[in-house]
Length: 336
Image (cartoon, rainbow, N blue to C red; front, side, top):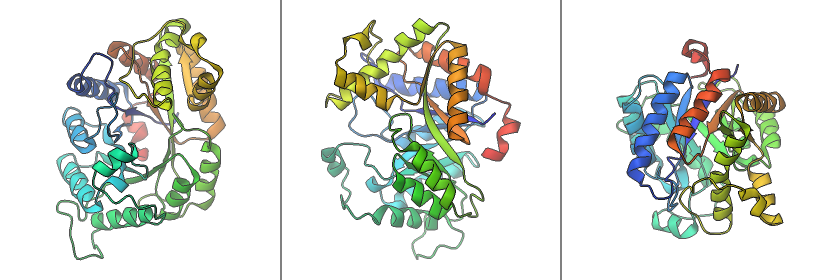
């Protein structure tokens, strides 16, 4: 069985706070570690009322400090928002604190709207070459023999695995060219998934970090003891997606009975598109859906995200998933 990992947006639920989200993220990471999941990644977003993981490196430190062996990382850092040197220093610090456990996934989207991106004080250049240059510069800061005179301290000589994240063909091409593992955001943007996988595998150039291609795909899971309960749990993220696409981002709302039946044709189409890569149902239904997805895509690893309003129900969803798919950590070591 391929390894499974966790993607956490540290969701802020309606009526709750970021402080509660951080407590729940640590509890979920500890739960995932006990269940045998491979990695625990947090994503950078800004100005989103339902996502608390804006200061991603700080939250990674919080989670890594409260766990023992699960890999912890960024899924991802939106590199256009940052100086590569600052990210090298941040993740050099994390690697120094938690050696051998830190991953650094890199994306080229701002993780925010344009006004928020401007407030981050970075150059909003549309230069298509800037992201690849920034990735190369960041990689060089971690090299044992950096080409530039500036050094990342800590950072230089540390082996922090880099990943390229994407939801289009651009990221697949870049990951293949650089010989890096590739994570595709199929959990919310599945349209180009299969083309991206094919391009990445066809054009992959082996590197010192990654001798063979490695594809990790995002996948939504809403698992419960019964089909009907799981369908109800999934309505929280369905509401959140519709709100976001309607220009009304919100905290993660509570489940709503009969929500799908209330939607118009355009809203239904949005959900059918963005949540294509999902398993919703009883343990057996989820098991079968994940097996079909793996067989259909040839994924090397799945990153499971479960945006569920009730924290205990979210923990239970991951436990159900792990009943069928987790393995002892020794069997996952070669994927680390």
